[in-house]
Amino acid sequence: MSPFTCAREREVSDLLHRGHWPQACSEELRTHVGSCRTCSDLVLVTESLQESRRQTAQLPRLEPAGAIWWRAQLRRRNAAIDQMSRPILGAQIFALAMALLVIGALAIWQAGNWSAWLADLPGVLHLGALIPSSFPENGILWIIVPVLATIALLSGIVVYIASEKQ
Amino acid sequence: MSWESIIPNVLAGDAQSLAGSSPASAMDNEQFAAFYARSARSLWAYLARVSRDPSLADDLTQEAYVRFLCAHHPEDGEVAARRYLFKIATNLLRDHWRRPQSSSIDEVPEHIFAAKEPGTHSDSVAMLAPAMAQMRPRDRQLLWLAYAEGYSHHEIAQITGLASASIRLLLFRARRKMARLLRSGGEA
Image (cartoon, rainbow over all chains, first blue to last red; front, side, top):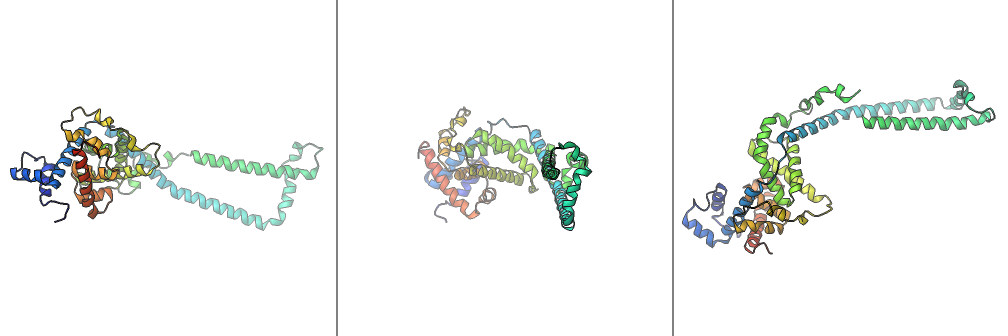
């Protein structure tokens, strides 16, 4: 026998949990409990906690079961949507990577023509009409490039915010 | 185009088919309501007495049921479902204690319970609150599960995640300390 148990502990415990203690037990067992520290501790603690459980269980004002059911349904739906969104997000990332790859390949392939295209751009877009005549012709590129970069940056931000809202 | 138009089944509540076998298939709304009515008060009592914070017990009780419904719990009847629920609640409590607190749960005064317990019948029950306050949270958990809920050592091990072999010794020590506190009027 373990030094911290009594051979009759289980018997007393069963009686306590069935609600048979102390009425439905023998006088001999009651005498034993009175003299055994392990069993008397068991009875004292179990009776106190069971009574506390009965009293504490009367206290809460519980939320309706329907509200909890609804909240669980909502959470499961959101989890299911997240699960479905994952492959779509993967496809979007893949498409973006492929687009950047193609743009990069195109940029390398046409590396020699970029300066000529940029030089022709003001004429194609008739940007000359927007720029004062006093402005030197070579300086137009210094305006166009930052403007295009700003537009590209703002477009990226708009796309990001739109995707976040979605 | 919105998600609602793309995946109508998901938002129409057909998420079960997407997520595979679902816990809700084992328990419908009415079954859950009945299970909730039978188990919620004892779960709340466990959380309230162990945490010593009725407001926290309110929150954790709700969260435990929501997680219970979302999780894949064993379909071995109500006893197993109840045990699983207590396991979720125990994990929630542990998570709560691990989070940095603005104020310790030990600072919640016990008179919150005492004021609502007009029908305290015995001295030992009156002494329980100060005695519980002097126990460590883990000891409160073990004592409540073993003696208020009547779980076996094996079941307590499943609920708390502690080794089954150590439950007996931990419980013995906690019970001895609690009995001493109850006899001394809650003073260490």
